[in-house]
Length: 221
Image (cartoon, rainbow, N blue to C red; front, side, top):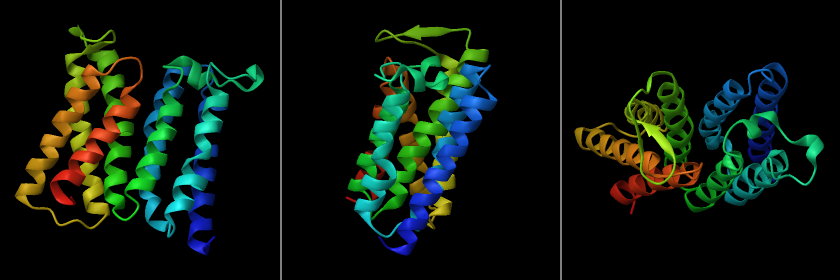
């Protein structure tokens, strides 16, 4: 393992450990709030990615093990004593899907890390704020495939996805052009539509894959 890979793995594990401590211990009396904090803040891993030098290390050492760890914290864990309050507060497999997403994106797009970042940030900040704003302000609801969403939540999904992918573009030194901005608006709109259509926590899979794929399709294919 290269020194930078070791640093990257260490930062990921330390960062996630701190988030879990805050959400499971400090905010344990407010499980819904802690779930949102974890869902959004774990997306900052997108800014650690450039430290890694090896695809397999990022995918299978930094990201992959969290599939197992988050399952053990889920409501379906065989070890009930370590079940997390945060996981139990929302869709039971949400964090597991999160980990699966990052692992697959890391392996497929390691040579274009901005693609991974766009997927992660659309999933974390976009979907996270869609839920927060939708719950608080979403009076008008819709239900297409068995999961109630709000119109204001979908608008928030579009706005926060667009903002965070712009941040990713700047962070990864991609030149901003009018064409790029139009495509990012399109990606954000599609991500919002996908989030609105996807039921039962599966948006932690569909949103990042669709957002990442669309960016790859328009700019890197």
